[in-house]
Image (cartoon, rainbow, N blue to C red; front, top):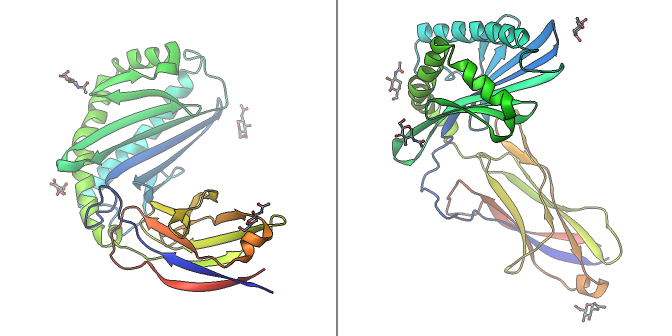
Length: 308
Ligand SMILES: *[C@@H]1O[C@H](CO)[C@@H](O)[C@H](O)[C@H]1NC(C)=O
Ligand SMILES: *[C@@H]1O[C@H](CO)[C@@H](O)[C@H](O)[C@H]1NC(C)=O
Ligand SMILES: *[C@@H]1O[C@H](CO)[C@@H](O)[C@H](O)[C@H]1NC(C)=O
Ligand SMILES: *[C@@H]1O[C@H](CO)[C@@H](O)[C@H](O)[C@H]1NC(C)=O
């Protein structure tokens, strides 16, 4: 049995424009997924997100908001939150009814799904940009740009018809406008501050290497496991000496219950003839948390051995 020495080295690579301090998420958006099954049956799902971290849910049967974090209300008073929840409850009821009433007019066929994403994002220099996008059947349908409804290029006459229709609902348009340009920025700044202890934390991952089943003669499958890190942006790569190895497969990044992330395993299929593999070599699995700059090693260098 031969032992291949492998060096597992986790380092954080400072990226291009990284700030010295990780600032946490920069955007808030609400997501609506409305499924219209048939003429009498529709379901609305609602949620609130800071980047890709969910902080609000929506109980659609009772029409109540679920605050997933103690600081999910930001710095809004209970009265203001109640007012907003009432508004969203009325919106979901009205939206469902309007859509059902206009199925023929818009030539919609059951079942169909409507998705709406609305929110605001903090840019450098404190500028906050708001946006709203609607999709039908998973395809962009309309968006609100610069205070006006813009049909998506592929939405055809339906998109134009929808935007024309919105001009008849000036009251609703004004409310949406106020939510986007006034309420959202104010809420975003407040909630980022209220949750900053949790949002700006850094959690170092566990990392370990293992060998997978041999894919074939003269080949070696190495697996780099990294788990439980925060924030999410991460890149894992394999280095043989100074050379990045091609052939790294990166799986989807899955959320853990505690708000850290676990990418599915990273594989490296090392191909070579047998004699090339028999020579000892150093192999590193390098993990770059793209948003972070920490000067020390993320994972202490570790030498591990694989019997082959
Ligand atoms: C609508 O869909 C629901 C759920 O699938 C079903 O129970 C109901 O019978 C359907 N109604 C009609 C009118 O098709
Ligand atoms: C937004 O609208 C204003 C006035 O209607 C216009 O001056 C400005 O150029 C527009 N901006 C964009 C990005 O379209
Ligand atoms: C919450 O914080 C934001 C940003 O600091 C501020 O503009 C706002 O007035 C505060 N209070 C409320 C109730 O929004
Ligand atoms: C196998 O690897 C050895 C050592 O790296 C090399 O000298 C030899 O040319 C390789 N043979 C083939 C068939 O690639």
